Image (cartoon, rainbow, N blue to C red; front, side, top):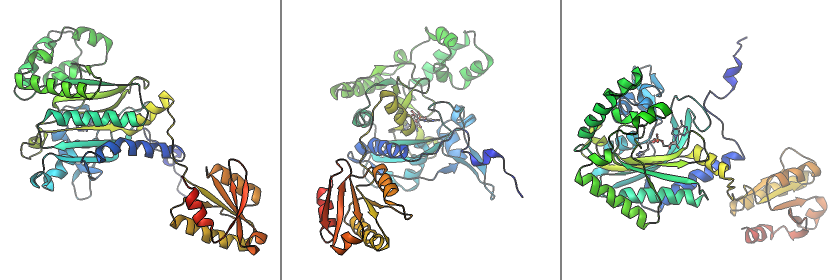
Length: 425
Ligand code: HAM
């Protein structure tokens, strides 16, 4: 007999199962995050859960933690190197290029997506190895109004859920004109500091990421680091100012954060992050920015683009932290309780007819007694129970019981579907 380690029957580290009733909240959050996009000209896109490793190493960046430490990679039996997707932007752009969406006429190509992403990170509250994002990408246009549109849509999505305690951090990372000079200035400054080996290496590969260091001692040393703001070229400055104006006009409050660098290398100009203060160290509930050079980095034409991804798991946690309960429609409106064999068949048919008429209905399966069946009816969240025994059927009626008031009335079998359809909602 094969024996399995106990671990084989538990969810892998850093993952969790979504089960009822919590899964209903999760679905509602996912829906709410996507809803503003669907009203704003974004079309749905779905890409594979895995891609060629190179897409991410080139797209997300060879020196990022995501690529160096956090990718789940595998070699297929045919020898192809694949990676479970750690993020969505590179995949969406790859798909848009491959399907020539950018040549179909309308730019920007506006796309939204929703799905699972995988990062081999150190698990902790709010940080998982398998997590869920709703994302949006607007491909092929350089227009500050597009950056503003996306940020406004994210704010509206969070607000529609009733979330209040989130902050928007905003920055500009410059472009290929002004960033190289800043990079050099920053490197010069950083090389003069007393830093550990790892960080020193980072100065040479990706000095902007050093600004992102969370350690208190390092942060102290960084206080007088040269600011990118002072190195932005005129075009980047004007662009950023326009984004800020548009956000202000839309009533969006933001904080300028010149240390906001983000963990992916493709960003240019506008970058932003949504922070929720009730979440502890994993406080970013969403983030994004402009990535004007990514298309060329993965072999496409110049296609300036902007996008974001909002974390579904963390948004659920943020709602919990604020004590927001979503008003979810009951999964079941009507619960049928048959008393006896003949009634089972009649009520089973009735449940089918109700469902076909658009009424959410469920049935006391498994031959439960009345008491147990009524318990199930109450647990189901239904407003009504339909109860019928032999005597009711002989009279051509079923008992319609209001589960909140306990009030019960006989309703003719012929009329019950119509009656419940009318009472719904
Ligand atoms: P990101 O900042 O890496 O950006 O991820 C976006 C959001 O996904 C985070 O703010 C967080 O809420 C959630 N998230 C990330 N990692 C985890 C994790 N390990 N556990 C739970 N939640 C997590 C991107 O992925 C970019 N592709 C966003 C983007 C789109 N930029 C331009 N377009």
